[in-house]
Image (cartoon, rainbow, N blue to C red; front, side, top):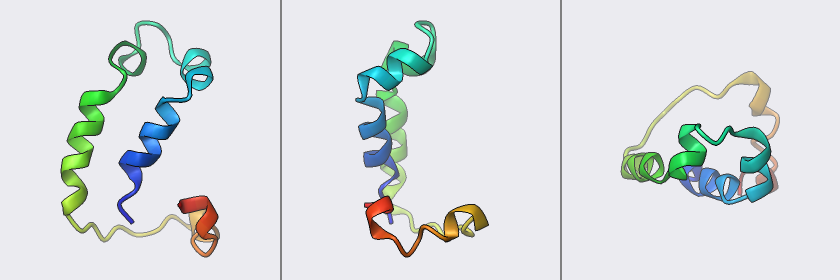
Length: 67
Protein backbone atom coordinates (compact mmCIF):
# COMPACT_ATOMS: atom_id res chain seq x y z
CA UNK A 1 0.00 0.00 0.00
CA UNK A 2 3.13 2.15 -0.19
CA UNK A 3 2.75 3.83 3.18
CA UNK A 4 5.88 2.63 4.95
CA UNK A 5 7.83 5.87 4.53
CA UNK A 6 4.98 8.11 5.68
CA UNK A 7 4.32 5.77 8.62
CA UNK A 8 7.98 5.79 9.68
CA UNK A 9 8.23 9.55 9.21
CA UNK A 10 5.22 10.05 11.50
CA UNK A 11 6.64 7.71 14.13
CA UNK A 12 10.08 9.31 14.05
CA UNK A 13 8.65 12.83 14.41
CA UNK A 14 7.11 11.77 17.71
CA UNK A 15 9.68 13.37 20.02
CA UNK A 16 8.75 11.48 23.23
CA UNK A 17 9.12 8.16 21.41
CA UNK A 18 12.55 9.01 20.01
CA UNK A 19 13.71 10.55 23.30
CA UNK A 20 12.62 7.55 25.37
CA UNK A 21 13.60 4.66 23.12
CA UNK A 22 16.73 5.75 21.26
CA UNK A 23 20.18 6.49 22.67
CA UNK A 24 21.86 9.79 21.77
CA UNK A 25 24.47 7.88 19.73
CA UNK A 26 21.90 5.84 17.79
CA UNK A 27 21.60 6.22 14.03
CA UNK A 28 17.95 7.20 14.34
CA UNK A 29 18.54 9.94 16.88
CA UNK A 30 21.82 11.21 15.44
CA UNK A 31 20.62 11.49 11.83
CA UNK A 32 16.86 11.74 12.18
CA UNK A 33 16.71 8.69 9.86
CA UNK A 34 16.30 11.13 6.93
CA UNK A 35 18.71 9.44 4.53
CA UNK A 36 17.18 6.02 5.20
CA UNK A 37 13.69 7.42 4.59
CA UNK A 38 14.92 8.94 1.34
CA UNK A 39 16.32 5.57 0.24
CA UNK A 40 13.11 3.78 1.18
CA UNK A 41 11.05 6.41 -0.62
CA UNK A 42 12.92 5.65 -3.85
CA UNK A 43 11.62 2.07 -3.62
CA UNK A 44 7.99 3.24 -3.57
CA UNK A 45 7.68 2.91 -7.34
CA UNK A 46 8.41 -0.83 -7.17
CA UNK A 47 5.46 -3.16 -6.67
CA UNK A 48 6.43 -5.68 -4.03
CA UNK A 49 4.33 -8.78 -3.54
CA UNK A 50 5.35 -10.00 -0.12
CA UNK A 51 3.46 -12.60 1.91
CA UNK A 52 1.40 -11.19 4.76
CA UNK A 53 2.48 -12.28 8.20
CA UNK A 54 -0.27 -14.22 9.97
CA UNK A 55 -0.02 -11.94 13.00
CA UNK A 56 -0.99 -8.84 10.97
CA UNK A 57 -3.47 -10.49 8.61
CA UNK A 58 -6.32 -9.89 11.07
CA UNK A 59 -5.70 -6.13 10.81
CA UNK A 60 -5.83 -5.99 7.01
CA UNK A 61 -9.60 -5.51 6.98
CA UNK A 62 -9.40 -2.62 9.42
CA UNK A 63 -8.32 0.31 7.25
CA UNK A 64 -7.99 2.63 10.26
CA UNK A 65 -4.92 0.70 11.38
CA UNK A 66 -3.20 0.94 8.01
CA UNK A 67 -4.10 4.43 6.84
